Image 1 (cartoon, one colour):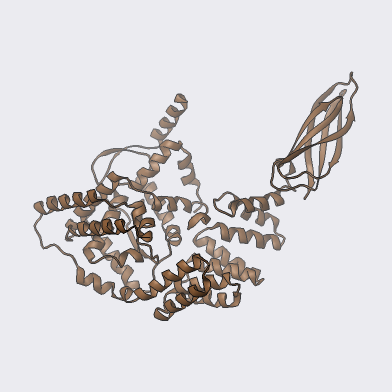
Image 2: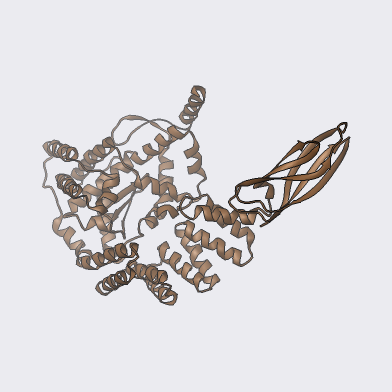
Length: 512
């Protein structure tokens, strides 16, 4: 074991080396290069956005404003990265950063802020997470724990919300949901405040922001606990540390500190004016999750009345209409959502599933494939496998079911069963094992069904070299229940002086 761990460590050292952290100035073991960080962030940014609600597009000026504030901070940071800043259409109060400078803030967090300086505190904090390699260091810790497995996974991922995300995007989901340690949070607070000050923002906004988060943490509001606080836990210590950092920073710099409150409130005015609409939408979402669809539909219709330009409202309405099996109405609502935003996977996924229910396989396949291009999910892939099977395309069906079987979530086992049902006819011996043995001079075999699928019949091929002559015989076996074993005789009976060599038994065909 010690030798194995030493070899793994040597491999990891070969893959990386020591480098100076551009933010802290400390020397660190680096297993993920800066180029790899940028590549991972770039690859994972779009699927991560999709998995977290897609882009907020009703007020394009708001996203441009957030990008401007982010650019102002990035310009005075210690690391040149291809920074990007987006607003996500998600009511959960959260923000996150991927390696390489890809940053997002949720609509639900924006509406809790009071000034541009507080927005700068959020974005500056996330900039440090990216610039100081906190996400990359988390990956490196996993690499040290798991050997080179993660390196291989990253380099070979195809590039992909919930347990249904598939493929390479799983990495992005893990990175944006990771819980940062105490040191990483304090580090991001401190250097984020330094960047704020360099850009002219009042670093004291980071104090008011943390004070607000601490109070909200005491209330244990579910959206905060599962959102920002899950990955960025607030604490009284962070408040106290920020107070001291603010004193230190201001003791070395003298300027008119900017809060940008009036500018921020003006930029946020449209979104703030629609708070009742999003409150109705959030209520509808919660009701729908409890299957209270009648009341939920009333709430989402109220949201649409208050804000007819929000595609998410039509998407939720369509999902509920689909659940109620009102498929034609669901199509109209999905169409309305896509007219407003044709870049979000969930509308294509829902419409594809609806087309499938209506028997329009061509349109269903097109929408499901587009959904998977935006964010590969087991739901879309499983339905594509079903459609391929209905059309007689066994090879494509096998590929889709195999991909779902490799994923996590509730569709994994059913997809595995569907894959086995297709593959077992081509490769029966992969699933039905045959072990030959001598039983009182008769060649028999123990047959084991390793699957969860019962077998109606099977043909077992026996071969042997008997007294120098190769012989072959086929025996037919009846039912073999799932995950069970039975025996079968070859019909060969040997004399004591027979020389029997190279005996094999193999299942060559089955009937389900």
